Structures are given as C-alpha cells and as structure tokens.
Amino acid sequence: MAEPTTLFVGLDVHKESIAVAHASADRASDIVYVGQVGTREADIDKLVRRLHSQASELVVAYEAGPCGYGLYRTLTRKGITCLVVAPSLIPKKPGERVKTDRRDAAQLARLLRAGDLKSVYVPTVDDEAVRDLSRAREAAIGVLKDAKLRLKSFLLRLGLHYSGRATWNDAHLRYLAKVVCPTPAQQIVFQESLRAVSEQTERVRRLEDELVEIAATWRLHPIVEAFQAMRGVQQHTAVTLAAELGDLTRFDSPRQLAAFVGLIPSEYSTGESRRLGPITKAGNGHARRALVEAAWAYRYPAKVSAHLQLRLEHCAKPIQDIAWKAQVRLCKRYRRLVARGKNSNVVVTAIAREILAFLWAIAQEVPVTH
Image (cartoon, rainbow, N blue to C red; front, side):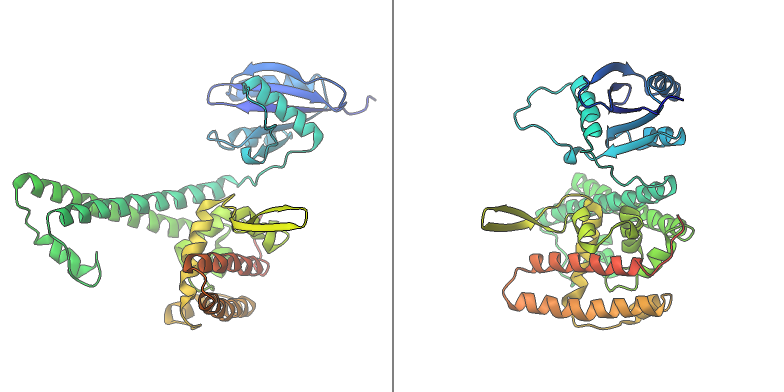
C-alpha cells in the first residue's frame, strides 16, 4: 500500500473565480500554479478530484474576506482540512510591490506548508446568523444617531433648540410636535427628518425584539444569561459579546482573549528599552465597543440595583460571586486610576479589559452545547 501523501493548497478567493496553487510536503519542491476555477460547488468538486489524483490528503487555506465561510463549509463537509486565515496575520515581505492572484495563491501554499498560517475562529451557521442580526442592530443604531443629529443640527441652524434636561423623551417629542419652521420648504425638511427618526427608531425596536426572541433558543443562551450577572452587561450587550466571541472556553487565558479583542497595549521593545503604547485595536471591534460601553457603568460605587438583582436571580451562585467580586474590584480601580490623574477614556479601556477577564471566568462555569 502506498504511503499517504499531503498536498498544501493555497486559494485566492474572489466573487467569481478562485486562483489555485499547491505545494507538496517536500520543501525543496517548487510551488505549482494550477490556474483559476469557478466558485460553484461543481467547480470545487472538480478541483478536489483533480488534486486528490496527486495526493491522498489535502490541506487548504484561503484568506478571510467578503465571500464568507461558504467555501470553508463546503470543503470541511468533504473531509478536507481547511484554514481561513486573517489577512493581517499573513507574513509579507516589506519590499514586495507586486501583487497578483497567482502570487497570492502561491504564497498561501508556501506559508501553509511551512506551518506559518493560523486559522481564525469560524462560527457555526446558527452562530453567524445571530451575529449578523446583532450587527444589523448595531448598524441601525448608528443610522438612528445620524438621523437624530441631522434633525437637531437643522433646528439649531433655525434658532430652534430644546431647553429641557433630556432629549428624545416624551417631553422632547411633545416639543417637536409643536415646532413650526419659518418657511413651508423648511417645514417639509423638518417633517421628513422627524419621520426618518421615527422610522429608524421603529427599525431598531424590531431588530432588538427579533434578537431577543432568537437568542432565547440559541445554543449560547446560557452564556448570554450568565454574562448579564455583570454590571453594565445587559441583554443586548450580552448577546453581542456572545455572538462576536463565541464560546470563550476556546481561549486558554484571559490575556489571549484580550489580545483577540485588541484590548492589550501595543509594544515596541528593543534591547533594554521597553515601550508600551495604546491598545492594539486588532481583532473584533464590535465586541470591543460593547465592552467599552459596559465599562462606563463602573464609574459609580459598587451596588446591586433592582434591575441587576433580577438578572442575578437567573444565575448560579458561583457566577454571582464572580460578578460581585468584579464589581467591587472594578469600581475601586476606576476611582483609583482617576485619582492618579488618568484620562477617563484610558481608565474605561482598562476596565473593559478586566471585564473581559471576568467574562472569561464566568464562561468557565457555564456548560455549552457544541
């Protein structure tokens, strides 16, 4: 019986074509460029049969991009090892100024054979669906904020500004209902702007309702419930973090998780010199923004509010203990760092990093169905 052979395949994936190159296990051998194939499943099947005629085992890699994980799922269903690689983590030569599909595919095959590529986390279909809905809500909130800003800026330019304590509450909406602009044309602009705010508000509400309903039957629902034991992490924030980060037990340590979210400081050290800079902001920006928003809740003294108490009733005692320990530590840490003269944004970022560590500890206490 012939010994099994391995072929390392690099794919440069585009919307309508895939550039293919492969390398054998013998590092002295050259990279072979196969050419371009289509993106249909029939094209992939034909390519797999062709490559299997040269080797019994295939290891495939391609860059993560706008085409998603469909190719990964197609290949894994066929029993082929596939890596989806983050473009930012692919080694590149500083002096390289020529970029083509052929070179990219060959480079992926070469680095895959050398063991220099690491796959990103690929969510399941259901996890990705919840993540898409969470991101749709986040995008809708951004559009709503822009619509509100345009309306307020328009009224300010006309000398019409609300003097109440808070905007977009019932009193503010009653004020807007009585606004009369100087000209008919400006009144139309005002009414259309106000209508845009109302429509976007309703859109956000619909997305939030759908997110809550779908999350209730999601496999990570126990994680979502447990995360809400933390102060500042309410339902939508908990769903966002679970959807973006997945099962936190796949990380070996909180530091590894913080690096994934981009909340660790950048560093430039040489010789005996060690310089730490701002956070790297690498990795998942959606989770990072949610954590920073949650961190502002620790500006005030440690306290279990009525709303937090209702959330804690759904959590086991070990999770409640972790959440209270976190609150005592982080509230005290916020006051100490501010007292030392640290900028509040820097302090909140440090608090967000520690919240992530406590969430990692909570995830260790929650059984999750894989």
